[in-house]
Image 1 (cartoon, rainbow, N blue to C red):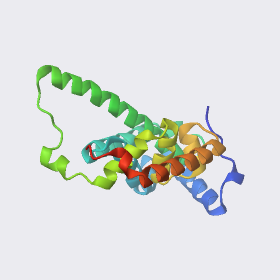
Image 2: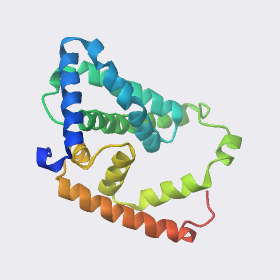
Image 3: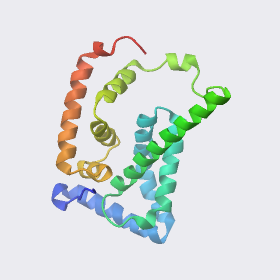
Image 4: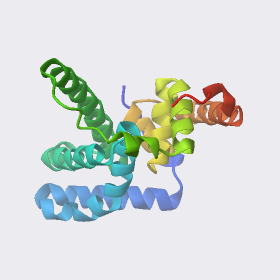
Length: 197
């Protein structure tokens, strides 16, 4: 199910931005170099979204590059809607694929006794406590709530999140409200996470 973004759901400035971005994307369908303004606008939000989901900067950079490569390859498939919603749908699917691929590679590495390419123990010890607690709290949310919050943090609007997740705008709003209320409660009661890393 694809969410439909109606003009009445948007502020006038937001409608202008969406129309401008769609026009840029339609120009990119004729000349891929026209995609550059969209790349400049969305690379950092896409990277941050991938980083939050994957937890590794290099892995997130690779995933972000794949997102834009897929977007360029599929630029002729864009017909209407939010460019951000379209890009973050690609990002979400790319992250899911990256996690699946990573899991299968980990199994192969263990089978053949290959060394772990992850960060050194010293680097892991320097991990940010607040970020660890936040990620633990995020893991307690439902998958839908987690997806809504991650896309909101990536800078998407409610209608764009609805498009990316295939939800109605009202489902996004209520999911976001419940997610933030749950996060506030969990972070206020930080001891529930204990001292375990």
